[in-house]
Length: 351
Image (tube, rainbow, N blue to C red; front, side, top):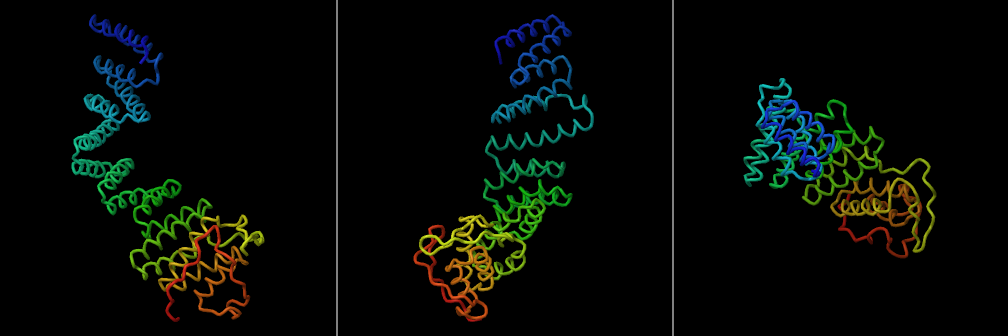
């Protein structure tokens, strides 16, 4: 707060001791004009308004001060201002403001519990806030964030999912998408979140991004040894992700080492490498149909790249020159610089 404002507040204190309320209010307006964005000035102004009984003005300036402190990353100062807000007389406000004050009291109780290192008390306060105010999405976010810190990942995912479902049900998919993404960060193979995320991405014309989510889901199930789950998830969602190249993909250009240039199609170099790795994992785990799906799409993107041809041949169990794969391609002279070298997968079971 500026020195000029400090001097005016000293004058306001003198006016209040002389019971000159009108003069004090006029000086308040002057100081707020000098430092309109200063949270300390807003807080002191709110204190004065509360002292003279102007509860609505006090509430408004406390609220502005708390928001400013939050923008500054001063959560401790914002919490102190919120405590001051809770000292205001609820009877002076309309029903909507009274409800906001009740919600604030529950949120402040949760923050106080966290400061006191009592996380279970904070969880209880957040849950009570959700019970009383189920439409307040910030409470779900705060509870979920706390549950993640407590390593209660499944509970946290459910909180994010609740918000995502609400937005998705009401057709606000742009707002639902980040919450579904957060669920999948915590539980990559969550089928409902994955399907709904694909819905959101399709509506935004961003289908290509769904491929990453599907890949992470399948990988997580394979790492957990759930081959049946990985197969079911791929069967359910594989056709919905944008793995295919554009209709008019540029022709591949041979590069050093016998490779084809990645061009400017649907896959980036990193995405090709990641999908190739997942395809090899599927192949080594016996998921030949899923591996074939991946390698077929990769080969459609880079039709003259022999490594993809060989991997597809292994997945399909088809000999080079067969009707399924009629063109014999020479093996690459060296590993692709943009993808890991082909590892020798375990023998796939006979079809």
